[in-house]
Image 1 (cartoon, rainbow, N blue to C red):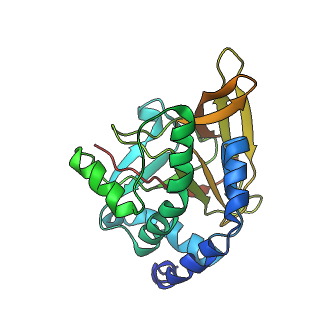
Image 2: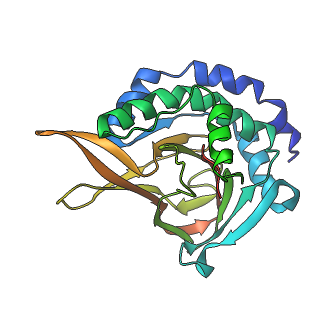
Image 3: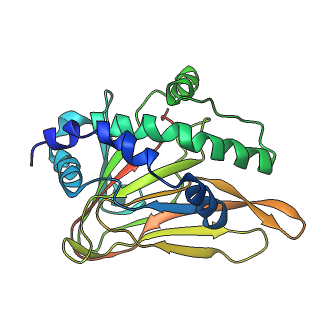
Length: 245
């Protein structure tokens, strides 16, 4: 599969994003801490992105999860300049999520506010020494999983991120469900399993999100991971909006 397939179709991503029901997206994020987008990428785009994994020219580093206690499997961080489709996803989505992020911070009493464009936000990250690209491509095989975690990377953390499933469930793999947990104050954790098809995206809270309680808004802690793969191989692309130190 040629990488050109993915790179040639990035202009249409803006149209796909503009067609989304943003009110539904915001409502789901407020209620569950996650929202899905059906068919954000085509099957050809998914295959083209997954095929990049074997070409290290696209990446700055490779992480084997088992060596660090992160789980089992591996992933690679893309290097700057990012592939066109990754760059387009990042820049097209950020302005639509910044308003939700600012509203959440206001509700939680956090003073940080996010600028209108992603480049302005990256300038803020880079001024603080967060210079390394964070979008990544993850690869899972039989028995692999990703422990519950948060992708923080430095002082500046954008509170929403996205993962897109590149493989086809039941055909390419079984198991490997995307999982979220929500730790509520003085309560047990709440799990959320998000079903995804090939090309579907999930947008979710990175670290904290506000929840309306009977006595006002309180802050909950979010973590995400992937359950054990039972068969096949699973590829996912992760879009993180802050850069790393």
